[in-house]
Length: 510
Image (tube, rainbow, N blue to C red; front, top):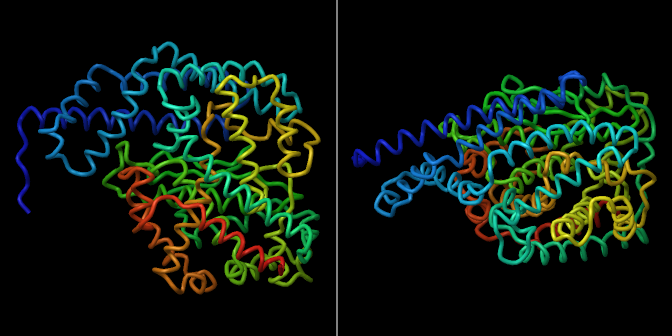
């Protein structure tokens, strides 16, 4: 194929754009490393200044992203005469930077820096507040964060609802108008299925988890499972933190974290599999996109689809435990000696309303997200204030799940997201569930032996499919473009509704 000869001015602009993209990506990688260190390794007494230093570096990245130079380059590269000769990857890079530039160029650098420092320090305040059941410790930080996010929403602009501007940060193109009917369908079907399970479901042996599972042995089993399901330990690591997360420094350095609880073996087990889904996605991105804005997932929702797919549709499947249960039983013989694999499978899929989102079952999990979604919408619209959140939270949990939190630690303080300004993030989790069910339907068509592959430990074949169809593309496509490319249709809630109905009717013998 004949290579196009570019005009000298366009060639020069492309070289400058590539250099700027690479510089921003390098800085962002170091910021990611600093974020990981602050949450995992940094001594407590140094975190305050650490947050200020990270805020300074974030501000430099922000300045580069909205600089006059970036504006001029984007103008040149988006001229119709120039745009038509750009390759697909360059067009995607320009799209990503142009979107951020147009939204953020009116934010003063000092305002962004103050906000960055605030969110860095808010994480420590949140950790202390959560540990001591003291919402008042976190409240001043949260109030300021909400104030900033309301201002940002106005600067970004929106058509219908101010929350749309924040949703777009995490899931480009998503709006309240699109999300409300998706969530309404999912909420109605979930509540109906939950009621059927509670009234007519056959009980599970969930009591097997009400005993101690030695933490060191939990670590052993996690490190045994990770490479088998596809996470490359030579391009990543696993550590401990208060709230599990995955952090990418670069494609060859992807860091997972998890939380070990001696009295809750499921927490670290499924939390680690979940984070591995994120990590494998990042490890599989096309190396040609490394050191560019494309070296990340298509969106937070698509990213969550990969972690929820691996955690639930693979990790909570009967076939997964047919393969892994002998090793787990060997590791914990005292706890599991009289538990069959079928009993264990049904136990890990127990449906029971609970306070903690990250430990919620697959069915009620989405109801936790809807509580947060409704609170965030009202917060950004100015309909409620941060100081009222504990009581509002408790009431919504009672309305949705029929239980009332016993403390703010297991209530409004349980999630880290608001401390880093992630308002608009939570819907990504349920979007991930919706995307993953749609992807599952497609992978089962392409790989009719899907469940047999899991049962035989052939996770490589499944990961190859995910890499080929999703992972390799990074941010090349928008989330809507990608889901259509993979499945042939836009996001459709019916697939998750059908999946949950089929799975839990079988688990509970309804």
